[in-house]
Length: 426
Image (cartoon, rainbow, N blue to C red; front, side, top):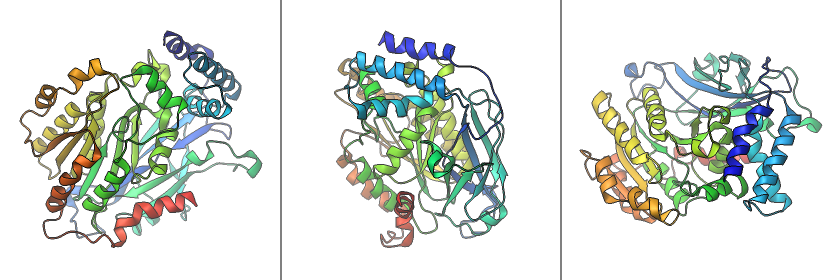
């Protein structure tokens, strides 16, 4: 492990700090986002025209330094194999290259890019990227796009390039220059979910396994969770308020291609993936970055999401390996104190066992959960090991979310995310 840490900590010395405007050699990722109503306190749930649609646009920029990237990725792959992290085969080696490459490229400082929505000619200019290579801008959606938008719609947006790639120039990351905006009406129900060890097997508490699951192995879903989330989507959604899914992880944004593909390809409802906006260049150690400071980070991001959708009721799902119980408890109390109408209706914590038994004695202790959820009614929170344990919770939630009767599963809104996945794959 010291050898791996040394490699990541020393990579910064191999990369130039040169910054330049976006050109066709630079790499741009346009992240999926959520469109919400402006001034939500003035919006009536039955009025689909009130309030202007707004969204937070996030883009990641990387400079064009292919030669450096190839040399460093080769070195990391060699060390990973030397430490027996991955078998010596071409498939695994290529997988390591793909997942490590975003950590190697020089982040793009002070970059600006324009985007547009499919079928609309209006260009939207995003704000300049900051020291972390990230641009984060709150903007009104183009009038032509907003005028015809309905809750549950998903619109494709793309980076505008002065020169489009030809078929023989297609890069491995070109698809990341296209993102999706999901239109969400406030006042319904939604889900905020962790990723690592909640829906995806990562084994954060074992560093060697964490490295393997992140860089060398095919991503694997926690058993039963894709099916649970499909049920949860159908239970919470109505035709006017399809339930949004926000996947909130403390992993660095460099893993966005990997984690976004995991969510889409493993059968989970399509949603917004929010990752930590920090680069490995700002970290003492890459591995430690996946486990440090997660509570304050998640509390901050959940607070932001609640400002977009202040009247939405949330189901928060996490795990016991980090600080999800404490972060969700803080979020619960925050919404209760603010009194905007939204609340945390459920907190479900996946108890991870068998990864690090010594640490799990404290992490999975009943006293830990009782302390975290002090003053929160026990009907709100539940700790589970198997997704099947939540079936009775789903039934109770169904009655609470729709006291006047259950939404029909054959309604059009129930399949909007499945239709999106079909279009994406075809």
